[in-house]
Every structure is written in structure tokens, then in C-alpha cells.
Amino acid sequence: MIWLSRIIGAFLLLLIQCSLGGILTIGGARPDLLLPFIIYQGLRYGPIAGTISGTLCGLAFDLLETGPTGVRMLAGTLVGFGVGKLWREGPFRLHWPWGTMLLGGALLQQAIIFYFRSREVTLPFGELYLRYGATSAVYTTALGIIWFLSPLYRPR
Amino acid sequence: MMRAHTRRLASGAEWIVFAIAIGVSLIFLLFGRGMALKMARQEWRDLAGFCARPFRFVPQVFTLWRDNRMLREQAMELAAENSLLREVALENERLRGMLDFRQVAPWALTPAEVIGHPGPGIGGSVVLNIGARKGVVVNAAVMTPRGLVGKVVEVGPYTCLVQTIQGKTFGVSLIIERTRVQGILKWLEGDLWILDGVPTGTDVRIGDVAMTTGQGGVFPAGIRTALVSELLEESAEQFKDVRLRPLADLQALEEVFVLMPEPEEREPHRTGSRAR
Image 1 (cartoon, rainbow over the protein chains, first blue to last red):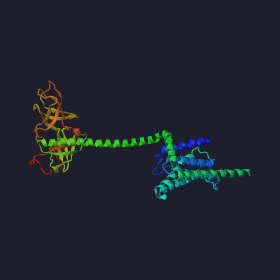
Image 2: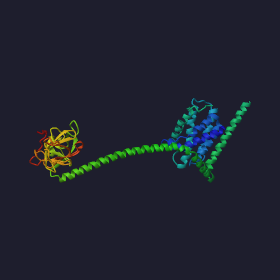
Image 3: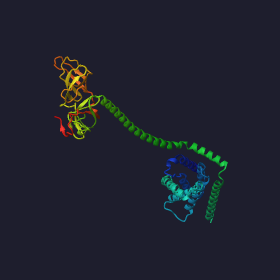
Image 4: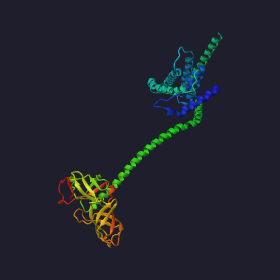
């Protein structure tokens, strides 16, 4: 039952991302609404939930995009697992774990996406990443913070 | 001991799941270009597109709002442009009328623009943008193609002051064009002018045109001035109460003509003079 609610939640976020992506885009920066969900799963339920959420959400997003399949899947998997693992077993404790995880996860995800995209379009990765990837990561973080500050977020 | 064993098992499971997920991702990355995947993509897109329909009203609202704002701005710009074009068309019509009038008029006329209304109200006196440098002299008649406006009472080098027929001190001898009945045009108040000194029993009708007689030496004969608008005839009175309406629109003067004197009448550069 809990997995069903997660799937429905992720699917709704995906639909909102597809429908409102154009409106939410500022300059070249477009937020990824699924990433806060993946990070939430990793933080709340651990590395396995984070990994599965990241993989499936990434695959669902990949299938809608025109780029190579598996890029967002790989990024989602790494972010979901990394967040869950670091938070549970990391030798450190952060004051705002979700904020740091969100920004770190978004930067990592965009780095993976733009690494593969730069190979496709033969443009320098650094320029693409700084212009679009990093800005999108900051934008995603800013939107994700709204979720983590909301009363719906329940820390583990 | 038991808890440590369970933790090790859980950790192992996490790594296994992670490894499988990474493996699947890499398989998609390396081999995900087949026909089956293309078809799966298409099916998935169709499903997502169908389910996303309820969310589409949001961007549509934004699009409508943006289009509406753009159309309002365009409407404002077009309204301003339209107003300007109407103004230009009216000015063009007026100037054409003045040009035609100037060509057929028997007098030497100089066009001028009204640049001010210095009196207490619109219509009593006006300032024109020509003066002695253009040959304007005191007492020169001022008119529009429709009718008499007044006379120049003060001349500067580049401007002149005109007393219109809408003034208590203004009087001009007029003749009814149709029957040659004469009288003196006088302004009473507001839009009320009378033709003073018209005996009862003379033939004056509503709609008759009154024009200058040429007597007095200020205005030449034949300038159409006013229209008989009302007749109040009392049998016991000696004179008719003939009321007139000026042909020139004194409330909306923009372009006028100044009747230039004959060369021998002109006194060169007599500036700052006043009407006697």
C-alpha cells in the first residue's frame, strides 16, 4: 500500500513536471520536481527506497525525453542510494541535512545528465553545466526546500 | 550479536539493490536504442500525455493571460494611432478647405494658426502665430473659409492679437445676402448675436446669410459672417429682433486667414501698435 501511494505521488509529480515545465523554466534553468521526491525517499526510508525510487523515477523521466535512455535513471539511482546511505551511516550529522542533500544531489544529477548531453552535442561540458546544469540544480533546490519546510515532511 | 548480524545483512541487501539498479541503468544506457524501447517510449508518452490533460489548463491560463495582456497593449497602441490618424485626416480636410478658399477668395489672404486664447473664455480673443514681419496690420480682417472671425487689434513682430466678433465692443455692418437688408451685428451673450437696426416689415427669414457691407473701411464687402437663426417680431416695435449665429466656429478655431491690406495701405514693421 505504501509503495502504491509512492508510485501515485511520483507519477503525479511527473505529470506536473511535463505539464508545467515550460512555465517553470527561467532562462535555461528548469527544475526537476522528482528529485526532491527521490531525496525524501532516501532520507525517510533508507538507501533501498532511495535507490528504487531514483531508478524508477529516472526511467519514467528518461522514457519521456528524447535523450539516451538510462541517464536520469543512473543519476537517480546514485542520488537516491547516496542520500540514504550517507544519512544513515555517514560519519557526520548536518544541521539541515535535506537542504545539503538536496543541493548536492541536484548538482550530481545535473552533472551526470550534462556529461552525457555534452557528448551528444559535442559542446564543452563545463560551459553547459555552469550555464544550465548548476542553475537548474539551484532552482530544484529552491523548490525542494518548500516541500521540506512544509508540514507534510516528516523527518525520520 | 544478533543485531550486528541483521545490520550486516541489511547493508548487504542495500548494496545488492544498488548494484542491480546501476546495472540496469548501464544496460539501458549502452543498449537502449532498440525498436522495443522506442515503442515502449511511445506508449509511455501517450499514457503520460493522456493523464496530464487535467494539468494543461494551468499553462493555458498563463498563455491566455499573456495573450490578453499583449492584445490589450496592441489595442491601446492602435487606439492611439487611430486617434492620431483621425486628427491628421481632420487637419487635412481643414487645410484642403482653406486652400480651396484661398484660391477662390477675391482677397489677399495669409494663413495663420491660433496659438492662444488670452481672454477669460474661449472665443473672445485669440493670438495668431504671424505678426508684422508677415505684413499683418491693425484692423486686418480675420476669417475662416466658413466666415468672419474678427479683426486684428494688436500686432507684434511675430504674433498678433485678434478681437473676435464675440465681444461687447465689436460691431460690424452686415447685409442680408438675399434681400440686401442692412443692420449692425452685435454680441449680447453666450451664443446670442443680434442684427441691430432692422426695421419691422423687412424681408428677413430664418436661414438667411448675412455678410459684411464694406462700410466703415475695416472689413471688405462680401465676407459671409452669420446665419439668421431666430426671428422675434413684435408688431408694436420699430425694429425686428433678428438673432444670428456666426458661421465660423469661434469655440474651435485652429487655422484662420488674415486678410492682407493692399500694398499702399501697409505700414512696414509697425509693431506694438494698438487698434484705435
